[in-house]
Length: 67
Image (cartoon, rainbow, N blue to C red; front, side, top):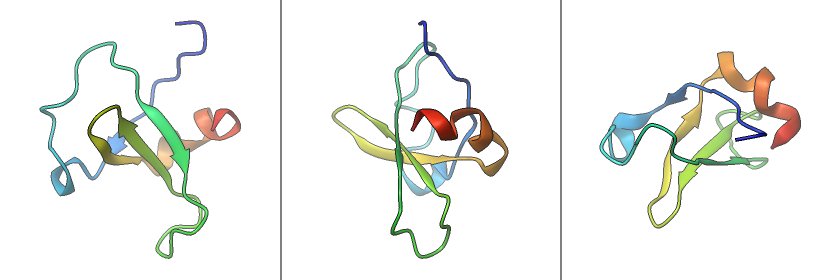
């Protein structure tokens, strides 16, 4: 993909684990402006499933301007 960004997704155990993920899967990233625990939180979503985790803090710089 032209606009691909590689990020680490955390919090998988709070959702569906690694089951829904496949190599090359497209994950929608959405900034959570109202997250009371982390004002820089970026949610990771898969179609038809919803939230599957969050972008790790270490990976935010690479995708911040694209979200």
